[in-house]
Image 1 (cartoon, rainbow, N blue to C red):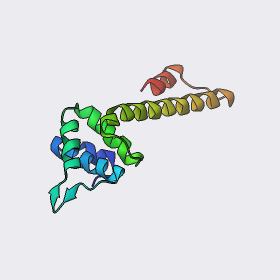
Image 2: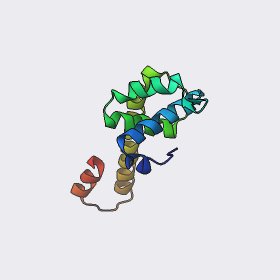
Image 3: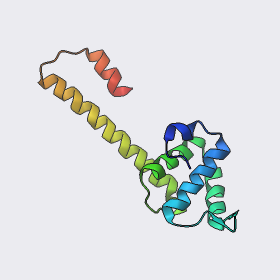
Image 4: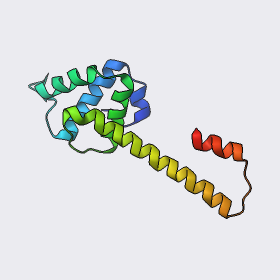
Length: 120
């Protein structure tokens, strides 16, 4: 099972779907396979994820890789969106803090480069 987002993104779509289903089952403590065959929980997850856009599946996988908390299947998309927004907010706060520290230390910097760093 993938634990690195870069490797996950490089996988074909069906492999991403499979990996995401495995992560969902692992996070929720349900078995993905019974008697060497996919379980009903696995198929429910696969059917739900198959309807979602690829980027949403990647966001769900990222969330499941970082936070192994149980989550209801039909709340996966909402929880993943909240997780991604929280991570972006934290990243932006860190960038602002670095800019403020640079200003307080009296270091001169290029405003255009600072804005591009913040927006990029």
